[in-house]
Image (cartoon, rainbow, N blue to C red):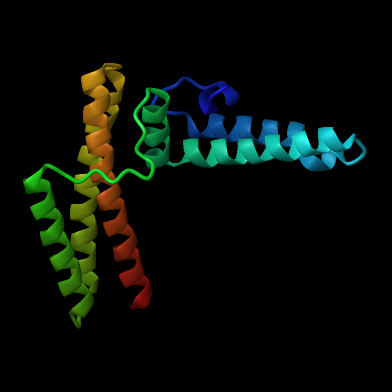
Length: 172
């Protein structure tokens, strides 16, 4: 059973997060290890395993990048632990420029406005890529899946930039 089936949700990128949370709580109540405290050792062990699966499935489906990666995995494209390098020189140049810009912001004496502008730019890039990702996944084709994988790789770069931005904001 895959994670979408576990939560009785359609296998797609766009999910109803309230429904996901509702099904998560129902499953947690049903399989929580405390409910099996007086059960056999085998049943207790299965309960712990099921609870761990439910938690992992929830965390995967809850986060859009992890959800996209899981969707691709369900379609036979494995991105975890991959060592594939980018063949898109324009994207790599953009990443280098954004990293330089972030480094300049970190070194600046007055960061507030620069951080806000950078964050807006980052969010625009991410939103564009997420929109393209959803469209690629909706194609349900090999070319759509390959394009989605490429977009997901790019989104992971932007996610790292977002984390670095948040770190700089916390250091202020």
